[in-house]
Length: 525
Image (cartoon, rainbow, N blue to C red; front, top):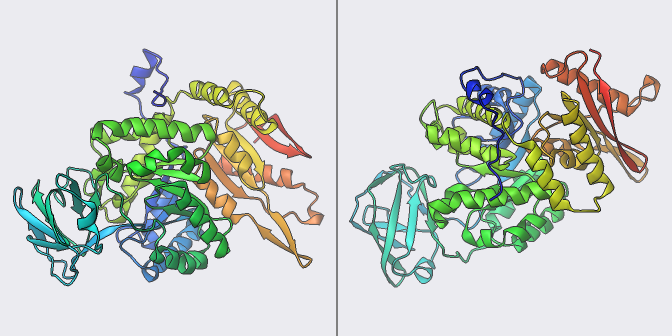
């Protein structure tokens, strides 16, 4: 089984448990995705989230509309300017989601061993006896013995706001269920998940298309998280739609949430730009004891092809508590050791009481796990997966990381125009940060020159260990080359973060003509 590897040197490693963790202005190499919402949408809170390590802001359209999120993203931009911290924008689609609408938001108490009927008659007021869903084919696709999960937020299995139902029988459009656990459903909307059953709804819904074409286009979003990705055609359909909306540079992260998506994982990974492992829904579709196997296997596959992978549902208890549980802390560490690029915080920052503390705590846990990550083993696996002969780019990128490890470099500086070179270096999981200096791409239309690359810069914020900058345009009279200017930027940033001190070694990866080269320089301060 791949993943979960660490380096332990006794007795040094055991004694390190008793020493204080090393603090840095870069919280961790592992990236943190924060979901912005009611508890985290003010300028002040967003500023604090950015300072503590949030590098991607997620906008979930399951419960909020474009106007609401527009106010939030405007606040995000203000916070970015104030803190001078970059942040990528992720739009999370709704997808084929079945819901119960509770317009009055009146709490509904369900008792274990009671019966409840799920109907498609949406005019019925929801109660402990009758719940109406927005899908008229539910009775056709379920059978006796099937399991239905229902709640305001999916699902840890421990909260009292989610209920497990067992299908007893169907009558016309009604599904009669046995309540398996007592729960209080509160809020305006409850999500319904039927284990191991395909919902005959499009993955990219009309509502999703409307949001992307309006809010997404207006805000030039960096990443779309495609909810409930079930097969490669889902990704291809979204890619074609993005091109039609002139969102050519927007990346697609496929959300794997069901057994159906798991079965098509290799094909989906090949087509998508990244993957999000949605362990909440997967924990329903899979037996609990199988979830870790999927995590390790999926992360290994993503690592080998150099595509970012993000893990969800790690510190659910921090929605209401200041500290995570011991199991959650271990879970975060294992995700890092398994090879995740990022951790996605959902309810913890969306509606949690401690959004800033959740980001800070997860960052510290990630950094501690990174300190014992077995980079040498990962490096060997990556080379073995590639085989021989290696491409020139892979050869030089791996050599850059090998050199950085050997000379104990403080940072690796990569010059790139599209972000590809930085991703290639990051694929080998260097133990030090990768500073990506993204040059301006000059494109000519009707003899007019325009600068691009801001999207490529922000998208690198989802890749483990990469910290990007947009290189300043070079004025002809400055006397500097773009490389000299970019290197000064990287050095200045490294110094400001406390990562660079005089006599530190720095590995530089850049293109010269048609070739890529690696060189080692000493930072003079």
